Image (cartoon, rainbow, N blue to C red):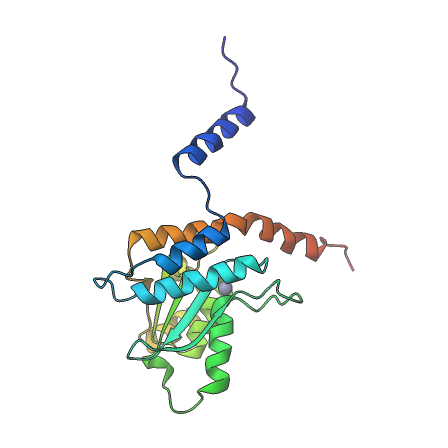
Length: 212
Ligand SMILES: [Zn+2]
């Protein structure tokens, strides 16, 4: 009779996947991105490299590995940022998209119409960022990899009617960035490396409900 232990099966799977593709350290990912030659056949390729680089910087600072850039209508970077939730002091609002949007709204009010801009993020925006991207009026929002755990764009039909109406009124365009699958894989792996650990820090920091 065979008795399969879940633990052993999981361990074995981990060992096998390690043999197939050994996990890269953040240092390795940085080197990989420095040497990566962007393909000219994808319009978001260079921006995708940049957001992945920003994501590695965030990871090295011990926070969520996500980066974002805001591009003008010629594809030039106007603002950029990475997640800063656990950088220096705790700031629940400082997701990568928020950092880039705040930079833009602080420095470029007036001359630039947000509808002409594109935000590229390494990861599908969460509900908080998606709501702000709608209120900020950014024209196009594209992300390098989907977030099956917490992404809101793929769940757009679940947004409150007001948000959906504003987004439709703005003719916002949401979707995957146009980049190589290789970069998509890189963005996902860079982000996944510490995601669960940092989610846990969020829960531990909250301390659980004590009543009132
Ligand atoms: Zn977010």
